[in-house]
Length: 215
Image (cartoon, rainbow, N blue to C red):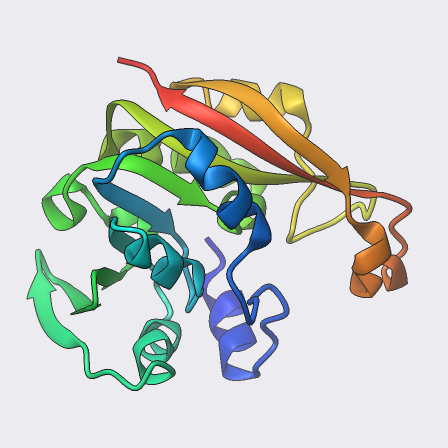
């Protein structure tokens, strides 16, 4: 992953990918994923409010974020002092059912995070460079129990560059081969995304994929 690029984005406040509210697709479709409690992994989580929503709905939430300032901001903006400790050499922050591991996602293992009943990927997969995507999905699978569930938000567009990258169904299925997948929802959101229109997009489809980890 391009660590320097993302650190600079956070340092300069260029975080248009961060939402000031819970993602509506999470609220709408997570109940349909049928995950009855348990542990949820959120890769490359930033300071997402989605973490709080999952915790408030009874899940033990673990996010992985390699930019320390982003992880710290999640708790600071909620006015809470997180419990801090080190696990397998990685700093962790925890409070109110949310644990953030400050680490490169490719370096964490189940010894650091434990294993999970579900994964919520809203902005990680579409930020991963093409050459790292297979490594990313293998790492996700290594942290999820057989039968574990996945809610993945994917994009297809004609910007010609990323992030967020455009990833078609053929590549998506080939790369997430350790999961059985189904396209659950799709909508062109370009009308509500002027930043992508300004970059020249003529369509910008947002998709929700459901997945189940193969045994």
